[in-house]
Amino acid sequence: MSDVLAIVFHTPFGSSRLERLVGQARRAAAEDLIGRLEASVSRVVVATPGDEDAAAFRNVGAEVHKTTTDGSFDFGRTLAAILRTTRAQSVLSFGSGSGALLEKHHIQSLVEFSQQTSPAALLNNFYSCDFVALAYAQALLDIRLPAVDNGLGFVLADAGIRCFAMPRDAASQFDIDLPTDLCLLNQGDHGGPALRRVLDDWLMTHPTLEALSRLLTDRSALVEIGGRIHPGMWQAFEQATACRTAGFAEGRGLKGYPDGRNPLVQSLIADDPPLFFERLAAAADGAILDTRPLLAIGGVLPPPQDRFASDLFLSSEVSDPRWRAFTKAAKQAGIPVVLGGHNLVSGGLLLLAEHCWKGRDLPRRLHPESFRWKEESS
Image 1 (cartoon, rainbow, N blue to C red):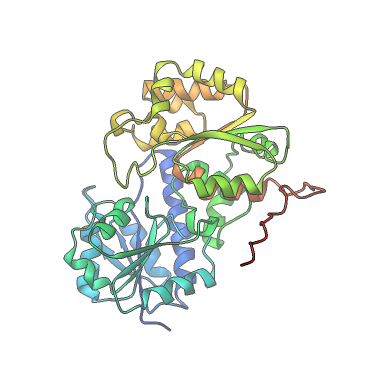
Image 2 (image 1 turned 90 degrees about the vertical axis):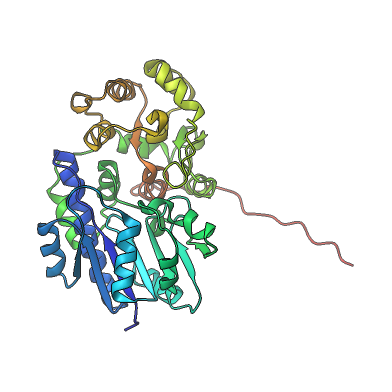
């Protein structure tokens, strides 16, 4: 077993019905992850404020670092405190919703990276970090770390730490943050035993996910994608599906490196949500939308219960009038629209591309073979 410390950060969600569900799923996913980590690391520490959560993590063999219960959790300060206490040099750090699709060979790669003898970081997403492998981690104690883990890549790079990015696949990019993420997992029967128990007890089905999935195997369909989508992720999705794609990439780095500027499409939605969806339905057969950068005017978001209810088209449970109007318009769009956050246009896209082919057979290749010109001989 390697001398590697794994840290899992688990912050409970609020008390609304959907927040409790997502919180339970994140805790269950973290319990499954701890089970997979135990064969490869020497210690697992979970940072969490909740007594009930702490007891659950101790039951699966983790140590617990209790954090503040007053809602002022600071990722950077907590990570630094654990590094000082443990003096660990090789560290894997996870948010409790991340790593749900990691397998043993992925974890072994993270462990091997963390055992380098000079400061380095391997991030699942440089622009919005969910988990990271840290080599020579004590060097981080000389850096002012961010209060939220999303911006970790920018801070480490600015401090001169060598930063590397993991391959952009479902294992590295998928993160449980929202009810839509649970629907994506449920659709493909993904997740470890603890997470599956939570998902199997959830009776709600997504109103548009299956209809949208059917479009992905239709060569004549056009699916619009919008939000914080990485060009490489868009390309991977397009190569794995039969439909045509169009869209707009806006708001990338919104949390990791905010600069106060509002995305362009945001003004179109704010002015008239029904008109936006009317035009969207005229231009496409379906849509996948990361709503956060499209509706967070000035970077301000409503409470999670509003955002979560909007993701499932439960407009009667959305108190924010702007989000409620958007949700109603999306539900009445006349085409299947799937709403969510960053994960929807990241790891979620790859799960959609994988699931859409189940039970369907494509008789010929989706895309032609690549061709390279013969090099000129000297």
